[in-house]
Image (tube, rainbow over all chains, first blue to last red; front, side, top):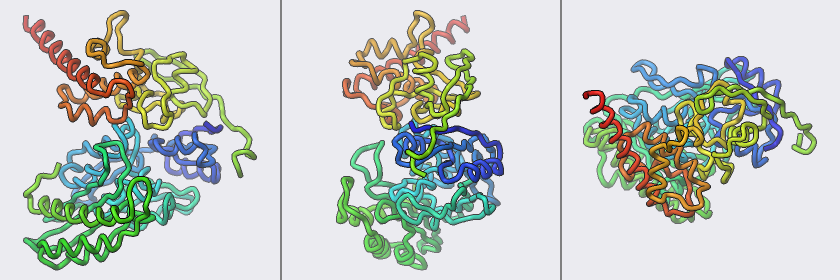
Length: 293
Length: 177
């Protein structure tokens, strides 16, 4: 490990101050499951860890009808996917967060960390996109909100300014008739990085789609919220033809690379297959035919 | 500023934590991981360094009731925490039911992964008294073993789960009597 100092912040103001004083070699320490490895392997020049886990704002996990779901940026994943309201109302969040790393990683890793890393293959980001998530940020210029869908700007790059960090994530209360689903393709059963992942949210009125959001991961430099695929569904009866049109639009929108996990052709194929499956699953949940979790 | 130009800036830090039920205080470098603190500052070499990046689980310990990879925890984070390591499993000469089950099922060969598997198994049985085989395999997926092929480890956890349940029944009967 490179020489690194450790400091605990007791409040958001104190963390902002520590990060400002620390300059560009100061990093927020939440679950640490990525940033400690980055420091140890010297892939980032890090001189100071500012531990934010003793700030109550970044450790919250609460739901009410008026405000929806609030998840602290450092709230560990195991708490998120065990929460009864998350299981009942936001199943896509459960499906994505319980496959990030293994048990020991989920004891520490967080949705905020997964987002801040801005990996194109991050499992939770497409799920948070379709849940219309908003990130609450704080930094030297004060507080602001950024939609999760607009957070990532490239592989490992985001809208975070110097000294700025995520405080919490907010998800609106799903309206009646909502259904969510998320799935990834991996060649193993667990402990792997997505070849492609897809999240879908639908609001149905009978057979007609009122709202749709479809997000695709590991198929472009950032996770993508797919406007064309969603528009193929909105205002239409949900049948085999509209689902096929949305899947084709997802395939069209994918701009993947070929690497050791999969080829361009395979990833584009998977974008279509997973989009179709997740639309059907989200619809079944919206109709109450399939239980949430 | 590059790493080469930057002066080394670790600090000496005093860490106070409960380790296996005993309050311990030690001097660490601010760059120490919990794994390094355990092995090099406290002389507790049960937790093993395998990959040192969160893939293998050989360093797994239970911190504040939750399974974590000690290589991915900074020593400073442990101040005020409660940590259980593999050294905390046996009671004197009496092995923990999981340790006995691992021996009886021959669930280890070279042994380097075993402390991590034992701690992960303990955390599992604390959460689920009677896990299915699938639940055991999924829970232990973050622990790698290159000797056993995993089947014997799964059987050991199943056996220990039975023992734990049996012990509770025996305990309840004793109380009734």
